[in-house]
Length: 490
Image (cartoon, rainbow, N blue to C red; front, side):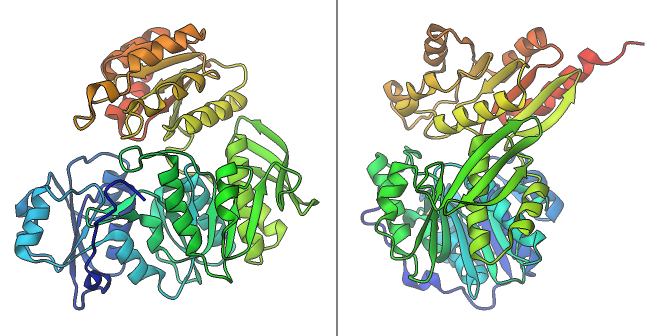
């Protein structure tokens, strides 16, 4: 149970999509899921508007291309046109000025998981990808491969899928792929989003402590996943990374078959012969101890091979042949902001990645070290999430940067709601990294990071920028800086 869940009530009438709706307004529209919902609604003929306090790429660019107007800042006037329905994002609080106007105007409102379930999951087999890590990549891979196999899936994913240039698709086929987020649904529904998605097949990649702003500890996270598992239908299936002891513990109570995947001999699907290199990875998949096939992917890293194995298990259950699966996996282009090469200038490669949890940082850097063997790996880290700006992972971060040659850590923006002694310290992390022999440096702002990079970068360096936000447009600014430095004079 997440913090504040007790006592939360939701009017049952809100589960009924209002009739005769034409104009829908989304509060918090620039969130990845909310932007996807906006695009899906527009594709179905609704007039869509939205508001947000923080408008930045890639979602702002996507919404502009889609023709959806964005009102920057939350204010009562944003509802002056009296939309027929408002979808309330989970970033919106009861104290938000638009929330007050919503109540005063008595405009019907729903959470986006409620709308997704009612409008887009009805009549479909819902394929839900859940877990602390790898949800976006795994769900993107599953949706893209289903599409390549001719099954015309719908999907709603928390990142821009390269093959489609967007993070949603309605689809006419029997399957709908959903990234199952364990974060809370809305201010009026503090349960996790994934409880709304009626999974028929679900993937669980991992379960660790995260989202310290809504979960008190790992036990609270486990209770949410246990609720998801309990929702599985008897004729459904859980594809679970049972090498993770928490996943194994919780899936033991599943009311449906559990298909385990991982590295262990007893796993139904087993990963072997993993090789990572610049441009991707290769591996062999064993099914019940027998070779199912040799596969390759454009994504480097053992963790991406595990994500691929989970998708292989689902597609096999859906009846796809090994050769079709192998073909589509090799074609998968990835997801924006997941080991995405933003550019290469003067021999310097700039990579954008969403990693922020300590486990994700460690696995991402391990993958990049294997992919760019022999090259200097410069890592720029912005602790920006509600969890990473708290001290909960202060010591965990110390042990996850060992694969980097140079580490630059930005001072996070202050979380005013967090007591000073509970806030993450970038300066302390840098000091701890230096004690481990890591070449680490602290910076109060992005401008000084860019100035330092201008001094130290040389051809063949790889710069991995890790953040879940826009990071002051550092990627484009760095590439421009490199272009000016390495451009011919005269």
